[in-house]
Amino acid sequence: MSRMWNKIPFKSSELQLTGTLNGGQSFRWNFDITEKTWTGIFAKTVWKLQQENNCLKYQVLGTLLEKSNKETEIFEMLLKNYFRLDVDLGNYYKKWSERDQFFKSACVQFYGIRMLAQEPVENLFSFICSQNNHISRISTMIEKLCKHYGEKICEVDSVPYYAFPDVEKLSQLEVESHLRELGFGYRAKFIKKSANQIVQWGGKKWFGSLKDMKYTEAKAELMKLCGIGPKVADCICLMSLNHLEALPVDTHVYQIAAQNYLPHLKGKRSVTEKVYSEIGDHFRSLYGDMAGWAHTVLFCADLKKFQQADSITVEQGNQRKKKKK
Image 1 (tube, one colour):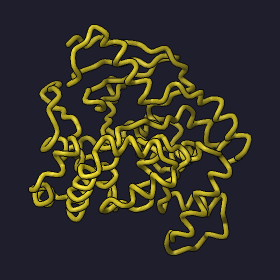
Image 2 (cartoon, rainbow, N blue to C red):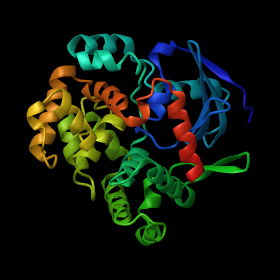
Image 3 (cartoon, helix red, strand yellow):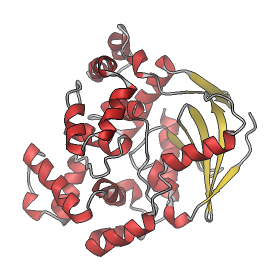
Image 4 (tube, one colour):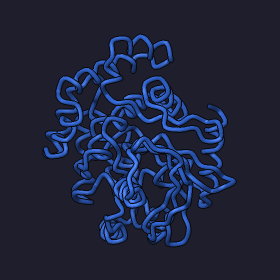
């Protein structure tokens, strides 16, 4: 496969790769500080991305997609869909800034934060792995899932890359015991049982039906899966089911809300169901039907690793994460 650079003209102010790819949405992107490129996997394809002034450059390093005489158009469409490049983000930033002074301050540095449109299966099992976990270990777990149950896509500089496994592979009889051996702990049970349920309910067709439901209905259906609570259900709704009003609330988000928006919540020992709903409803009333996207910008701005004005700090942190694997 030819590894030529292709270009998608796009305003730099409308897309920031650092904040989007390193902000806790997806766990399969790594930054090369020398090349200033991002390498990652989605749609059974290995990508290398680089940002230039008003241009998104990409290479396809390998793919399991069928060969086609329209490959360039297909890959470009996949990238545009993944980054939701059809959304006029500048217009939304303007609206959100008018409604919220905290957002207005945050968006100066954190411009162009895109809500990724991820594949539901990968998104769901990635966030099962994320429970009570840190990013480095989450990434390691996901790569183990891919290596042991996913299909090999290619090798680049002797490094193998694997697609995320189909849900049917994760429902196999021996999966739970094998994942426990690989260090997944209690998450092994959640992965195996959830995979079984999804297969029984129709697999990809079931996920498709969730996209067509109202947000609250889709969230309720997801919470019927083994090990899926409100936060993980909201992550899946927001990041892969197109319910952009979904707002995952964890301890970090609670602190943002209590510090800047809902001071009466300060001092709570835990995020109860009532507190969870109050926080989500507050931001939905503030930002509207894309509240989850708007709040992702605040989330990025508040993370310690994003507090330095120079984005190289973020990239160096990502490099250290890679070396520890």
